[in-house]
Structure formats: structure tokens, C-alpha cells
Amino acid sequence: MARSTVSGAYSQLVAAGYLEARHGAGTWVASGAATRLIDEDDEPRDAPPRFDLRPGLPDLSSFPRRLWLRALARALAHAGDSVFGYGDPRGRPELRRSLTEYLARSRGVVTSPGRLVVCSGFCQGFRLLCELLRSRGAHRIALEDPCVFFYPPIARAVGLEVVPVPVDDDGLIVERLAESSVDAVLVTPAHQCPLGATMSPRRRTALLAWAEATDALVIDDDYDGEFRYDRQPVATLQGLDPEHVVYAGTTSKTLAPGMRLGWLALPPSLIDAAIEQRGLTDRFAPVLDQLALAELIDRGDFDRHVRQMRLRYRRRRDRLLVAVDGAAPQLTARGIAAGLHIVLELPDRLSETAIVAAARERSIGLYGVQRFKHGPADHRQGLVIGYGTPPDHNFEASVAALTSLLSDHLEEGSAP
Image (tube, rainbow, N blue to C red; front, top):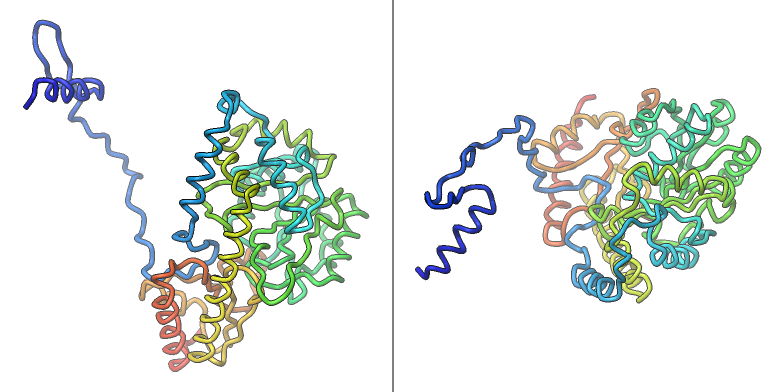
């Protein structure tokens, strides 16, 4: 080998700490170079299921890599040096301006760049809101029952008591709020998670009237509002009462949860406290990702991507409904008008627990409705099917595995 090649290799090993070069004595293996630290907690996670139909994810293979690279390159090319310093806890002004226009146009959100706070996903935003509520003397927050299963622990972690409020085909049963003396409520009015109901106009009016009368805070979690298939998108609650409603959105379903970008449109009364609290956590989300997202929105690439994915997910939903109807016509599908999942109601003679366990044995990722319950037990049984999760190449096989599972259990009539 050339001397320069060997010297370069030795230099890299010295810089990495594997070798020590002692002047006049040669090169030696560094003490401790062969020591391997063993982290007993660093065990490999369970392998993902072969047929993943768990809700909460989009098709990760659909992430628009080329669009994102182009947007990131443009953002870097135009970024000044100050971009790389400590920034505004609310987020980059470029993204907040872009989001203000996009949310008004696509979701009817009434806000301004100064009232938006960019977060690292909804969970961080929800915790921020819970901390604000606690600091203002709040003690109790209402959550839909069932709801996303990691929301109650977030609220409890900051000292709030979680009050489960049931939902029906019209959404959250608002009358229960008056009985519970809560200071705030988190709702998913466009597509209740996981049952899929859309909050009725009557319930929306009652919820906003309750918030105004009690000076309570409503958190409008618009987690998949961009994906509605059979009718016009449902307007946000925030657009009807920006003074009592916080709008929360993310890129977790439109792009990918790994982006860790979300936003809160806050009432004026909360913005100063939110900025202060945001500065006490991780201060702000990654600036280059914020700038790239602003580029995507401003050039129309984000809208085009969402439209394409809406068509793709609608075709998936239709294919899933046809397959389930052929294999298990006795089951009723709920929540089919929007989102990335449906709920299959199960008759009493079938056991949700048994079907989920059998799915695990067949390497099918599947959740039951009971996983999302956090209030008093009821007898509602169902399967929450995430049709957005499988990549395109595995979607048909995943649907076939599901229908085979359902057919087998309907024939056997699994015992509760």
C-alpha cells in the first residue's frame, strides 16, 4: 500500500481513540479500546408484524423524499447565518406565516403567525398545554373515552386529574362535562379517535357554549383532518371560537410522525405563557425542518402531496371495505368517511381479546377498541384497522391476512 494510505488509516484510528501514537516509541492499542459497554436495557425490540394494520401511522414509504430534499436544499440556500442560532420559541416566522395561510385555507383556522407555536409533535404540544393549565390553577381535564391511549398518562404526569367522558355516534357527550367540573377538554371532533364519529352540529354548539359559560379550554385535536373522502371537510371548532379553543395539528399523518413537527393555534390569553413555557423545554423545533416545510407549503408541493395521498388512502379504504364485506358481512364498519382507520364492530358472540391474540400469532398487527378505553369498562367490542399503515407492496397481503382471520373466527364463533 502507499505510505499515505497507511498513515491516513492510522490517523483515523488515533482520532477515534483506538490507537495511541507515542512520539519516539511507536503506535499502540489504546487502553480500553477493546472494552465494550453492555447496556442491559438495549435489548432488540419485538420484530414488527408482517402484516401491520395498527392505526396511527400513514404509509411511511410514501414520504415525499425528493420533494423534501429539494425543499431542504432551497431552505439551506436561502438561510442566513442567524437561522442556526437560538430562535423564537414559537418557531420560525417563515413556517408560522405559511401555516397561517394554509390552515385558514384548508381547515378554516382563525389565527395569525404571532399566535402559532410550533412543537415537536402533538404529544409535546399537549403536555405544554397541560402544564399551562396546571400553572393557572386547573386540576381536572376531560378526555374522550375511548381516546388515544397515551394521552391520559401525559395529563397525569403534570398533575391533572383525567376525567373520562363517553362518546357516541354524535361525538363527545357534552352534557357530561357539566357534571364533571373540568377545566379543559381534549376532543377529536372531525374524526373521533378511535371510533370515527364526527361531532354533530348540535354537540359542537353545546360544547362551545359550555366553554364560554365556564371559561374552560377546548383542545381541538385535528390529527387527520386533511383526509376526508365522502363529503366536504368538517370545519374546525377553533374557527368558531378562537378565544376558547386551541387548534392542534401535525405532519404525523400527512408526511410522517418521524418529522416531529406540530403546531398550536392559541387564544391571545395563552400565548405569552406558552412562549415562556416552550422556552423551558427544548426551546424550539429543528429549524431546517421548519424551513423545509415552509418551502413545501409555499410552493404548493404540500397540498399536491396531501391530495395524492387522499386519493390513495380512499382507494385503500374502498378495497378494505369490499374485502371485509366479502369475508365478514356480519360486521359493521364505522368511521369510514375520513382518516386512516376504520372500526369493525364485533357481535357479542365474538371476543375482541381472542381475535387480537390470534392476530398476534399470525403476525398481524391489530388493536382492539378496549386498548383505547380509560374509563369504566363497557361491553363495546371492535377492531381498529389502520389501512394507512402497510406499504403499498404489502397492502393486499395484509388485507388478505385480516379477512382470513375474520373468516376463521366467524366460523368458529370464538367464546368471550
